[in-house]
Image 1: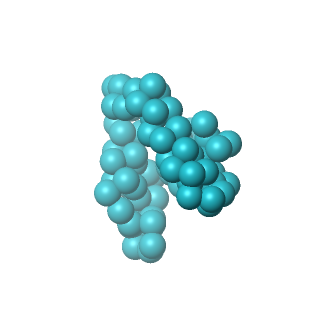
Image 2: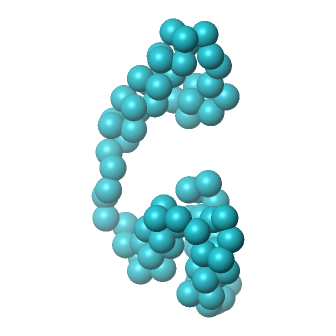
Image 3: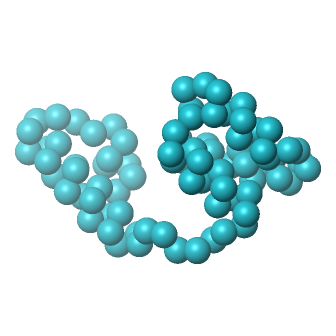
Length: 82
């Protein structure tokens, strides 16, 4: 979902569309969330400041995948992401 938000706002900006209106539309449905607000404002404001290290993300996903495997569950998203 995060990638879809990012791509939607980047495309809207490139097309010269009103990104505030796009945000209002997305807020009005099930997409409305803290994540949407954070991502939207970062893209709209061209804020590319580092927020979360890939090494930390890799550690977290690896731990999740290990936990899933140890419990006998499958992870359709975790393994490909890792």
